[in-house]
Image (cartoon, rainbow, N blue to C red; front, side, top):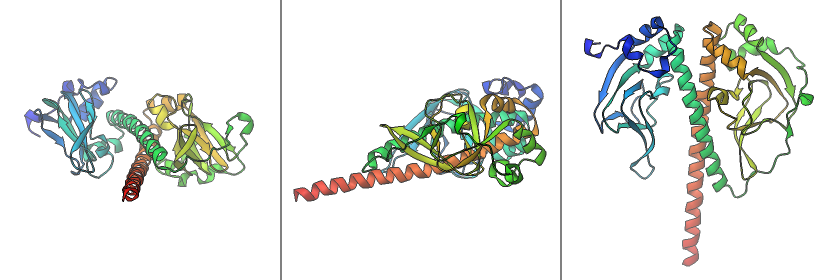
Length: 344
């Protein structure tokens, strides 16, 4: 890295994301950043290009664009100083899912995936500040995807889903766990990167119980008081529209439900009900936030596991939205074809 591209401690201090990070951790982060400057109208990222880095915007404004099926592009968002763009490329290999173009001159810092993943592996605190920001972005993105999924599903279905008779969750419905749950937690996805001692420590924060099928664990707009880990059975995440529940995702053993709302500090964006008898581990929002603020090995690994779960949910939501958009387009095409045929 040339001297003109070297990022200093003072430079990184300009980013609000790192206000609570001490100088030692920030100095480590600065070594992995390089300056990036763009002129008005310049392309920062192009949709379909290999995704291997993210940009922290220090000054300026950029537009996020996505291609339209029939050609052309549409601006879906605008971001400015303090924003991070291309953030999911720090987590996994792939291609850019949108383009980013400068609305005017833009300056910032670039970080590549190799440095970020190495920093996470070394439990650098500044890297986990970035990870938490990525988790907040993904939580918002998943909420927006689910809104679009329900809109398309509601318009494309010949009739809405049948109403469900759900019991409201209450302590009187909770039953004690009838099997040795701890014996097989290590094989569940959320726990696979944790050591036995860390799982035992995490269990001290949990409350474990079993619920029967057909219970509303929480509903949209409820306060986000807890997250839940499925130990056995399954939960269905859903959204309501016109008084009907549209299922979005089924979460089986090892999956986490309700964490996105706590991460984004908002009421429940989705509802959740038990689609079978289910054994759950519940962690309160307060305990989850305290764990996130900790600098322990358990804290870092659990946050990384939650982030991996978010990536999986986003991938499934993107596939579902593509399916719903295609289904809507086919329905519209058939309707037009029927009108044309009727006039012949």
